[in-house]
Image (tube, rainbow, N blue to C red; front, side, top):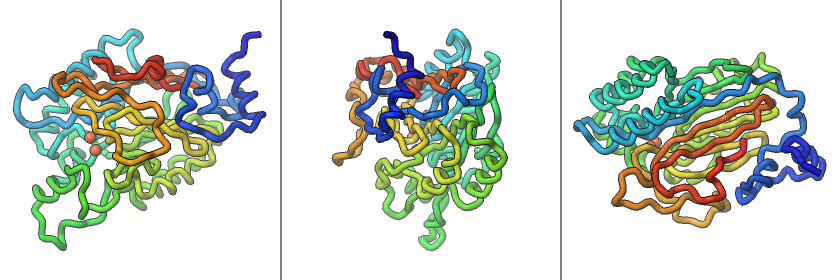
Length: 339
Ligand SMILES: [Fe+2]
Ligand SMILES: [Fe+2]
């Protein structure tokens, strides 16, 4: 007897297999990860795909190697067949929030538009703290937004807002930027979306029915991965609470520059690769991820980096596939992570 994914979902949920372990990623058990009982009631989704690119960390100097890796990702996306419906850039376009870096980044991203592929963008901490987002907003508009596409409600939020740590220390904008550009900034504090965006989110989803498919993008994870490196969002529990009424949410984040995935209640979380460099995994024993990417070859600028393509099917199941240019992805994840 052939068991379909849908049948497996039913079996899984009937058997009460709701607990998630990251080790459950496999062509079979991966389905359990996104098990939900009412997939057949999903509002109709027209299948489509989109790409996720991020963490480009561009420097102002010309012909930097990070220009090349971002351009390679953009060119790969332009060559995709079928074309993605759109691209999400998931933060850290610049490295020090400089105008020259952001302008260079916009110029590269705008190649997508020339190829008739639209993109949406959210900020990362490296884009923001030189001028508190002023120039970024002048180029790209509001840092949080939502839109509907083919039956799915997409949300982007700015998750890198911190309380003012600079005024009391009399820090210049450049000192503030350098402080937060460190992976481990002792004085910066944990970052989050803040009260204003929480209210906006609440309002944004209040009229949506629970069977609405939701995809949310944030620069940092909406779960506590490793707070010391801001692999977290401090008010993520409030974001998750607002989204808890939905049957299923897909949450995609940047910032971690590595293969990572998890599940909290109704949310599947996945981290995107950077086009710049891979971060190491946190130096502590964590229950996730069980399957990690291979260590990068420091001599190869295309190793350890990449982007992702995402396919969404008509019942809001799908696949998040890392695209890389070296032998980075372990075989269990070569075919993507089930959504
Ligand atoms: Fe980054
Ligand atoms: Fe970041």
